[in-house]
Image (tube, rainbow, N blue to C red):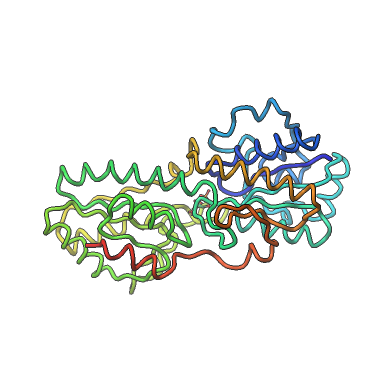
Length: 341
Ligand code: F6P
């Protein structure tokens, strides 16, 4: 069997480990052949592939980014669509696709499976916002990077007696903020799921300051303060109409400085959170997901996504995977909030 693999959407630590896991199991156990689509769905729509050999995946589990390249191309736009894609697959002799990506990728894969293409999905998002899987690879690494960065920012805050506002990723959900904020001992954690007023945040900051601490506020990029208009993308849209990452930390720092009169600085961690070497946890999870995707291909389990539940890897349908975003539950936020202020 010849299998085409693609990585789509934002890059994420662990993508290469998935590719390696799938290719090594596919070659050694089943004798499959592999190609990689260049730059996600763009490579599928244009029939742009590279051969993937055993040698090519040697040692890449620890490598960040994706050796296949990625893009946010929608396979139904840009001259794509099922007929075009099918013609490329036939010409290239590709029997099945393993699509590694987030919500958008899985939604596209679902539509293509409905018209008969043979696709298996692997979940990917540093934000950890897919409800069908307990964890996504990349999340653990992002939390480690954010925690270390916050620890470092704290020393500047303490030395200068400043309030530090740190913005982490999380456009729709606040998992990275919650975990990194708890790990680093933040005095306030602000996430998209929770409406909190600027007055309340200022109160937490003032309380921490009164105890002689340098106040530390961790904010997810998608957080919108109560009573303020949704600045959902304070940095606006790029030339492709997509929101630019970041901006809330700057706005919040200004507001807090005015209200508390405590000198306040903002830092946006941005893409540093999803770059570079994956953690050991993410490498193992990604490798297992890649191998499980091969099992799904071998068993003709088209239209399914491999997922982590507890310690087991199982399969869920694309429909189930596309259900709803996994938000931070109220009780997890309340638990963290005990430590605020
Ligand atoms: O995919 C997750 C994410 O990290 C979001 O938190 C963020 O909004 C987005 O990617 C930004 O990525 P890009 O600028 O590549 O679209």
